[in-house]
Amino acid sequence: MKHDIFEKLKELQDILSKKYEIERDINEIPKAMVTKTELLNRLKKTYIEKNEKVEGTKKRIANLRTRLAEAEAQREQYEKQMDEIKTQREYEVLDKEIKDATEREQDCRKDIIKSEKDLEEFKYMLERDEQLINQQEEELAAEEEKNKNESESKRQLLEELEEQEKQTTPDMDSEILFKFERIIKSKSGVGIVPVKNAVCSGCHMILPAQFVNEVRKGEEIHFCPYCSRILFFEEIESDDNYDMTFLSDDEAEGLADLEDDDDDF
Image (tube, rainbow, N blue to C red; front, side, top):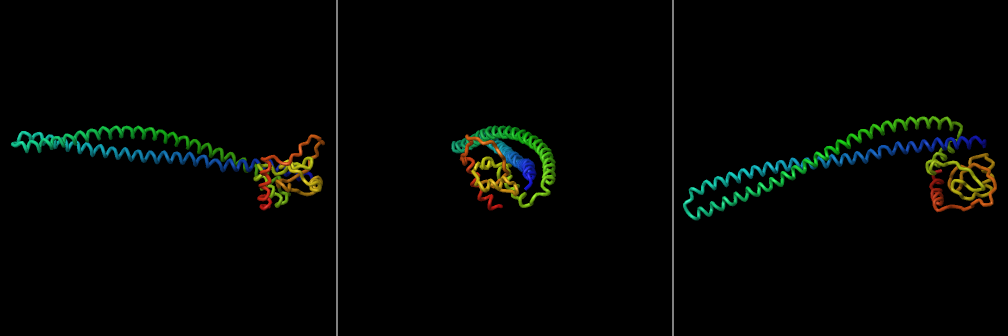
């Protein structure tokens, strides 16, 4: 295996990492818009409901004014009839009618005052919501334009990276490329790492001596048996204080992914 294949893989790793990051960014852009659009739709729905309350209150006030006018007319009519009564019984009956009509008048006036107060409150809330909706629509339009420009810019950059990828991979084995791409995606953009002091620098696991010798030869591609990353050998100066700790708690999670990665390969 020629040394330059590892250099090409390192170069490809940088390209793929940037490419996948841009793809994630492009996919995330619409999600932010969905949240803002849902908020705007909720505001519009609330506005419609409040507007219905305004129209309902207006009808209620109109109905109350009609009832008030009827009660006033009845009271006035009964009061005129007072001059024509002849018996105590007629007086009592007519007096009761006048009191009832007067009570209906008072009730209607109270309801009208309350309904008019409610109407003013609803109108105020409508004006406030209308301003908020207009503001949200303006912000959403500006955000959409910004996202459109940002998406176009990222897509152009993505096309450039895809062209670089094509120029880097024409002589590479398709199966190796497929595995390498999967590794880059699943291992946070790191798919090729050096072996140092018989330790994979990706997952920090100690590797078998024979396996390390095969990696050192560089005659073929070798994948770490623990984290599945591609390995290349890197000589380092001997250090008596070199830390041979196998795995930290966080790094141990890499082993949990190993079975899934191996199945995919």
